[in-house]
Amino acid sequence: MNPYHNMKVLQPSTESIAIIGMSCRFPKANSLDEFWDLLKNGKDTITEIPKERWNLEKFYDSDPSVERKTNQRHASLLSGVHDFDPLFFNISPAEAIEMSPSQKLMLELAWEAVENSSLPLSHVKGHNVGVYVGNIWTDFEHYRKAKNARATLHSAVGMSSNVVANRVSFAMGLLDQVW
Image (cartoon, rainbow, N blue to C red; front, top):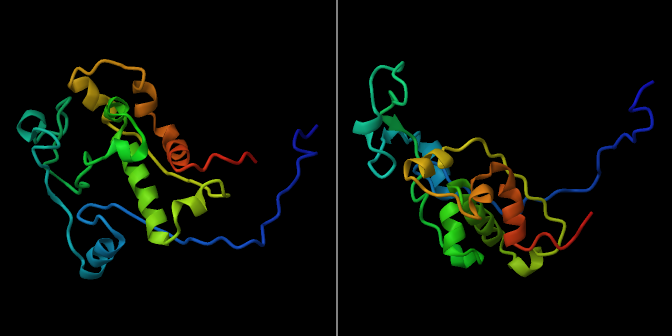
């Protein structure tokens, strides 16, 4: 017996979808204009890993088989990943400390996308707005462990990759409707 026998097949929608605001962060490009300039002019974004990211002398080894070391001295990295104003998003500083940079970045990007759209946030709140986020693993938990950070009541959610879209939806008031 086929368990999918009574399942309804969804047909493609004829409704239009409009993308009315965008934002981005790329290495050496903190806006869409800067990103376009990188692409148009073929600029290289690879630089030596700065001391603010990690101590190269402590973690570098030219031998890639050495455990707990990296053989990379260069990377394309986002700038300003720790520049976040938690109070702007009604997030306590204690909670912000526990949030992964990807959660903070997505909040900033979502806000910028709304600003870029020329729509006031009041026109977005409570409407059928989808938040879709692709987010892969992060080394934020390892960073916290290296700092001997203790777990707090914000740690689990702050380190989770699977709550990024929900955090954005909640912060921007997009949870008013249940489908």
